[in-house]
Length: 498
Image 1 (cartoon, rainbow, N blue to C red):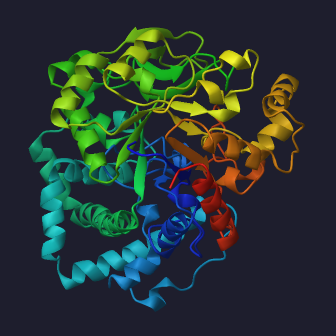
Image 2 (image 1 turned 90 degrees about the horizontal axis):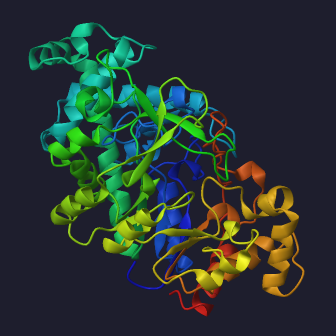
């Protein structure tokens, strides 16, 4: 980050719309305007790849590392761009106001997507669409074919498809494309629609002087176009099934660790291929956003490998990854790497050395600062350096209000009072910690919108280690009103962040 500034963390799905889920239409425009009015410099989002019911629609369980999530396509913008007419949107179901009902949203939007695609197909493909397909064919065609086959053989994972489809040749793929041309073209069309809307949001952010911070899950789902297309880059057996999976050892969030079940990379093969898949992945994402947060960055240096089939992560072991060679390769391809390392949890000296060598800033989370040994805590205000990104909390934390009420230990509450020099109120604790973050030396402070609004546990985005019921929270309409933006603007000015 170049200058001192603030930003807000809010995933696109959480924006208020009448269509049951946040999207890239007027709701995004309104949030960008709020950021501008409030003097904010950054908008941080979660991953925008395609999600699936099977994985609780988690943005960290993606069907592709390159494709984008059609559920974020705005119906209103489809009308504006001529892909639908206004009457096509009706009837709009009565969606929950504060939660995403993904099943209902998927059902409604699928109807709109079918109507828009058939109209687009019947009119004849545009030159702009063909240019998009040609430019992105290197990932788009394989993704579309994967989605064709995934729907044909549902609910089976790709490793259980017919043997000839596990490592298919070009002739087989071309035959599938011809037989399922309508399904194939619709998948490409949805990615095209997303790109039109995303580019408009991207331009709107640039015009407002707001930088987008994206997020990349370090691992890829087994049930993805990428593992199917590049099985040699992952540790699979001769039946194309994972031999080991990724996760983390016991930590703050779980006494038994976390088993993520993502296949682990075959770093030897990736390194021999000069990290081409990884380089393409990073380059592709940096065309969409300005800064890229790498979730679980330490996995690029050393990762927790768990034998496939185990229910807890306790049986895992640490393995080394070629981080230095990878990042040198990346730096040659992408000068001035705009990366942020998610370096929370168990971080060893070798990870810190890599971050320092490649000038990659890490994160500090204020909610973790008041435990035993507060004076030496790396996240306490007086220990946070200029180049760290300081958060009050992340999407994995309870909002401040709920943390203080239900999670903070007596030691943490005592240390909070000692640090502030006064007793703290549950009603104002969120603003106390926001002020504390803003007055820090950290050049960049990111606030979850839930903390800014003083919301409770009902607004929590994710509960690590719990596989269902996450990623659903939505803002209420007009919850981010001018009074909030004026207050945030004043704080931003007071602490020299404009």
